[in-house]
Image (cartoon, rainbow, N blue to C red; front, side):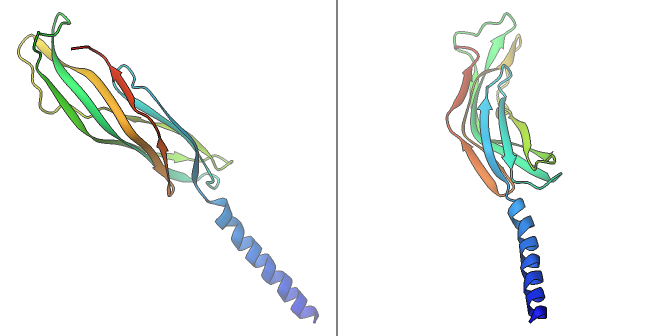
Length: 160
């Protein structure tokens, strides 16, 4: 009878110890936000993830749908009455690796850049400038969890 009791106690101890790591590693976002766009058109996505083990490295990715308008500006800082311009739209993303501390949490930020101008060329005496940028459907993901950041983040640099 005594052996059965010892075996039962040891079995429960093994089950309890096996469950602890499974409960400790459950990555999830506890905060996320976006700031910007900044003067260069970049959007900064800030986040905090909890539920990691100590000193664990996790890859975090942020994505968004972005639209950028580019136009030709003359060297005097003005726009012709009918400036050459183009609109570029598409998905943008940024990724990075972050390592948790002893508390199993990560605070970090990633930077999204506007879609690049690939088609607009300006005549002599003019150069390409970013006129406006807008980001929607901003999300951050990592460790099997995804969080959305609601809203539209936009900035107009020049009214043309």
